Image (cartoon, rainbow, N blue to C red):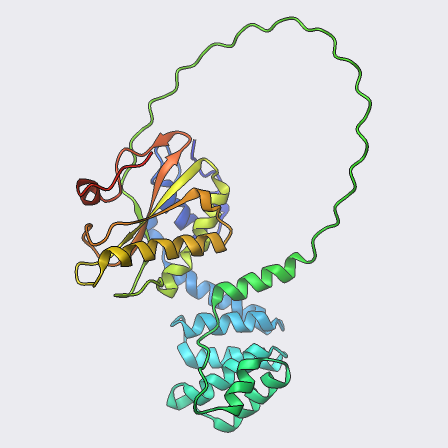
Length: 321
């Protein structure tokens, strides 16, 4: 019932995450070998696409490339500066700001105060308030960090979508002739439902630095692919979003729950229905690194019989249906 028939024609990254989630659903007859999925290759492919878009004159593509490069994909801060400079040249005030930020606050090899001040002045003239603050109070201003890749993509998608279409006025209903009496229908044959199968272990989708509730930039990118899988498969009715802390972290119970809540917020911001997500924190009961796992808790052909963390179930956490 859960066969993904288009895996061969989808981008490699979508196929990888599709296989990760669909492997949790019994009866899946087609899934890619997850071990063959190179996430680093996917990141570099996205960086290359950003270069192509930037070279075609797309300032937002330049800004997106700078964000990816600055998050340690490709050439790092040096390559990011090249992206931001091109975004600034194409009239994007945010690109000018981040060019100035790297040339004033970045690595020693990138420092160029004169060019930085010129870029910040351009950003300020185009209405970027943070650039004006950096010029007026260079010693005390709170600098913005690298631009958020998700926010850049959301803005670009909103521009591409354009204004909402006009709603047509409803037309009067047609005149309906009275229904003629019909012969009674024989009752259908009752089919006994199949016994739901048990689910295999859960899949880790995000990892965290110690004591952090924000996923690493590399793992955060997979959440967009999770959304695509859920959009393509309404058969998956409910996901348990299970947060975990390590045994060396302070206040592990609170930290694990906050991690689960954060991933739910990110997935909802990407368009996933909140009713399909259930955040649960399992403290440090389940050995391993700080992480969040996704478990298919309910589907049209399967129901959960246990938690993804047996130790949590043994400690008294309820197994909700």
